[in-house]
Image 1 (cartoon, helix red, strand yellow):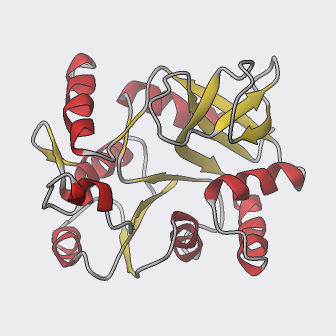
Image 2: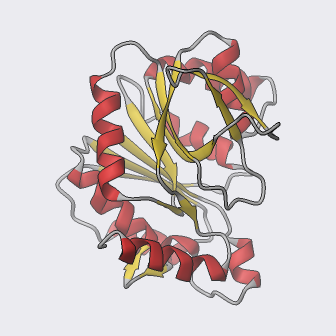
Length: 235
């Protein structure tokens, strides 16, 4: 399995809250966000780990270049206007099979993630599997509509109360999803949620995989919440 981390954002909300470290190096219980993800990926049979950071994150670049891992680590240094543009840049490294993509600030239980990866690797019927959660603590959640078999039928900006899940921001996809990414970029579609809608519109089969809780670290207050969540998981 190839893994990818989008770490090219500016972390502007953390900066406004007085956090001086670049977001990838923000520590949760003593470990930088980016190191936590790398360690988890290595535990889940990483064939490669691919990371994009922006040009201003010199501390992060230096931190990553010092790493000596048992799987190849490919670093892209490029400032991009959105996470989807970052995905496009890093997608050049992800063809040829299944891959897992996430942003650097996504916090989840390791055992749930391992189950997610195992399920996707064993799945021969779907083009992708998306992490979803019923825990809603997001400023602009993306609701995920599913049928009784957890097949994804749509991605919604709002809910009428019938949707139980929102996107957790962890995407497992096969390389059949990459040509649609190229089409989106050519057509000026520049948000990840709209890309996901295009996957459905183009007939790709996506399945939802529920996590109990997924936390994003966007504000200073989220750091303590994420730390307490990990401690409750025994991490």
